[in-house]
Image 1: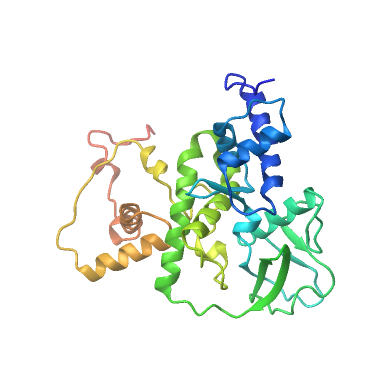
Image 2 (image 1 turned 30 degrees about the vertical axis):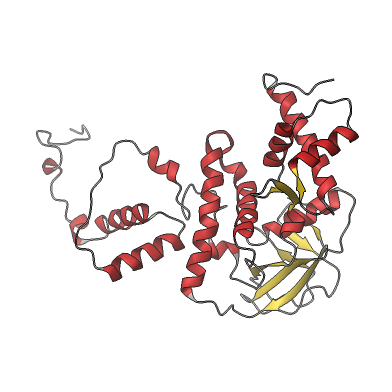
Length: 321
């Protein structure tokens, strides 16, 4: 028996899904495993299928719980994020509560917990059965945190540990560098997949971006940071590109012009670039954004004058009599 070919898109997608689930189970408690070794191991488990390295690579790329390392090895997302702490700003005191709202900021913990339960490895902490992005634990698992304080959830040793987090004492420059790192990996995910997947793929793209950022900077999330929704200005917001601009938006905007700026002071250039990276934008995108904002927030915008000045030869451009 051979695997489905790419012509049968549906069957091939199901094959990759099943193969990815099997690979995730194989590497869950294993050290980083080379792709070639995974191919050999899968062939032993499924001798009826002619599986190649390319099939394993495709399955790793498509499976959310698998992380491909630059050296060609593969590990489970739970292993990559082991020891990481993610924070959330609670909107009400946690006294006597057993639930904490998740969303963007606790997405990695939520996804790992859900995966563990689905594969028969139940944890004391679980996700809400109603799918409202909430993590629920036993009585007493949450510390008492005042409104708008930070709770930290650390994934460590196959368990979720909750603790109270003081406001992280992190310099703005360090926060800007972390935001730039996350935004860069997130934009790469969006860039390669925006045509086919759209908004529904954003949670998966964000999770893959976090994993790749962790591979690039192993110290990332070892210590508490501000919530992800604040670091990245909530990339899962469904309002298109409200907080995180993407390169393909610029490509689709139609005709445009380019220009250069001479004589910009170094200090101003550094400040604009720092703000651009904080918002997950390129320098050009940020400058265009603030110029567009200023154009409609100046006295000129309130004094456009008669419409005849803007549509020469027409007394009423809207066709009214």
